[in-house]
Structures are given as C-alpha cells and as structure tokens.
Image (cartoon, rainbow, N blue to C red; front, side, top):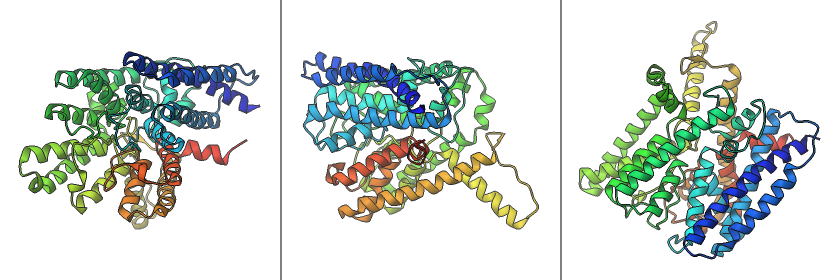
Length: 470
C-alpha cells in the first residue's frame, strides 16, 4: 500500500519538526514566560511522528507522485500544528491562529495581529522562526538533518518543495547539496544578524529581523515594522532582502569562482534590471512627498527590496505612492525574484521563458517553416518545461481569480481585495489600504491560507494531491 510509505516519510518530518518546537519553548523559559504549549505540542508531534515512522512497508521506492503527496501533506500538518501554540498563547480564534501559522511557514508575513508588541517573546520568536524554517523549505530543513530517503530519491521531495521551475543538484548527492544551500543560507543570515547588532539593534530584534529577512517573510517584533529603526539598520535589511532574492546557485558559482557563468545569467540580469527600474520609479514619484533626496531614495530602495523579494517589511506608509507605482508594485509582487531563492511569486525565470515562447510563436507566424530552439542560461529548454511553464501561468491566473471572487464577498474595495489576494498568493505580506488581515471573514482567511500554500508550493504539489489520490 503506497499510503504507508507516504505516511512513514511524513512521520520522519514530524519527528524533526518536534525538535524545532522545543526552541521557542526554551526562548519562553529564558524570558520567564508560561509557554508550556510548545513543549506539549512538541511531545505529541514526536509521538505521532514515531508511530507513523514505525509503519511497516515492503515497498521502499519513492516516486514523483509520492514526493508531491509527502510535501503537500507535510506542509498542511506542520501549519496546523504550528497554529496550536499561537492559539493557546495569544487567545485568538483557531482560524486566526491557522492564518498566522500558514503565513509564517509560507513566508508570507501577512498578520492578523493588530498589536504585536504585547505578544509573548516565545510567540514573537516562533513567528520569525517559522519564516526561517519555511524559507528554504520545511522538508529541506529536515532532510539536512535526517535522511528521508536513500539513493537520492529525496530529489523528488526537493523538486516538489523548492521554488522555481527547475531544481537541480549543485554537487553529487542531495545531502551535500543541502549542506551547501544551508551553508549559504546561514552565512547570509548570520552576517545580517551581526551587522544589525553593530547598527544598534537589540540582540533579540536583530535575531528576529534576520530570520524574517532570510525567509523573506516580514513578521516584525514592532507594530511599526522597521520604521523606528535607524537608517543604517534599514539599509542593511534592504541589502539582505535583495541578496535573498538571488538564485542560490549564483552564490555557489561564486564559491567555485565560476564568474563567467554568473555574468551570463539571464535571470540575474533581469532581476537587477527590474530592481533598479523600480527604485527609480518609486524615487521619482515620492521625491515631492519626502522633500529630500535621501529619504525618497532610502524608501525607494527599501520598499523595492521588500516588494521584489516578497519579504513585506515596511518603513512607512506605502499608500503614499501614486497609481502608476501601485500598478507596478503589484506586477513585481506577482513576478517576485529569482527561482532558487527563498522568495515567493511567479519567478523571473518563468517570466523570461514566457516572453521567449511568445517571441517564438510570433516568429512561427511570420516564418512557418522556421525551427526556433529556446535556450535559457545557455542551455536548451525542453518542450516539456515550456509546456509546464505555460500551464503554470494559466493555473496561476485562474487560481488568483477564484480566490479573488471568494474574498470579494467581504465587500472591501476592488483594490483592497485584489491586493490582499496578490500579497497572500504571492507570499509577500505587504499591502495597501488595510492595517491587517483580522478584518477579513473566516472564509476569506481560510481561502487565503490555501492561496498561501498554493503560492509557496507553486501549485502543482497540491493539485497533484487532489487529482491523483491513488
């Protein structure tokens, strides 16, 4: 029975997850808070994981469809489990707790809390720790510690979970690839943490902001997000939001000193181009509001990093920007940054492929007998990948429209509803008009939770679970 091997793998994930739940419990003890719920949930999760892991199965082979099911069910379970401590420690509704947990793990950063500064330190830590875990992927996090499958069958899990149209090994062996990825991830996070400390940010806040930036999540320990921190802290966070939006393969190429491949990267060039254009657009259209070049440039720089990386931190009222900026911001929220980064969104690599497909189709109309091979990053792109990209774009648009239809029942303005859907489906978290997501109905929150999971897992794993139950 194939379900047994799926649940056995999920059991391994839950065991690894149970140990992660102990960390916010320790934080709570350090701050002398009553946060026993983390310990109890950790213990129950460990017991359930152990029971599933001990399932006997004769079939030890893992197939692609199993990878989709394991990833989807694991993300669903860890999101629901992660909501339990939030529910007990903050006294919010169970729907609100689920929304906050899903937002945390999917690195969306959209919150239902009107005030965060009164929250227990253990919950503040947990919110950003969820970002940190979810940034590189929950299963990837566990796989770096516990071998989930032998003979590189974990590649099916990695492909189902990691963002972007393609996932490949950096070096022979999944385990070693994950070590490289997490090595880069930790080095960037620790670097930001140290720099924030040097800029005068407290140790606890530096840790939370660094984890939130690493996962491109955006939960902040303050009600004002990052607005009250120093200019140097804002600049540091801006730089690292941009860095976490870059494909991690680029950092690996830096390590092996393959500068030629870096300079040839189409995706990196488009990412930098979109970034610079957005900074310029926001700067020009906010100069009169701020009255000086420095503040206008800092806000343009910071907000561009936040939007394009799908992080969602803010340093002021984003409603100051005119319609032309809002339309462009919605565009970069949808597209976001590079594949192979910790960001959400459609991904720049897919956008490039879509434009190349359109160009090829136009050329075929003009020259019917011509044969045009589409390449990306110097390599031929298979038709299967191109068809998958087109299907993904179609599903992406259809799902946004479906979720928008449901959310519109709440009666908010079209712009508010559209922005709420874009910011959750794109895992961005920064939004116009509304102060937080507590204003939406429970139905809208649950639908947006589905949207966050669809956006983070990039649709196919969840769709595959629904349409292929055998």
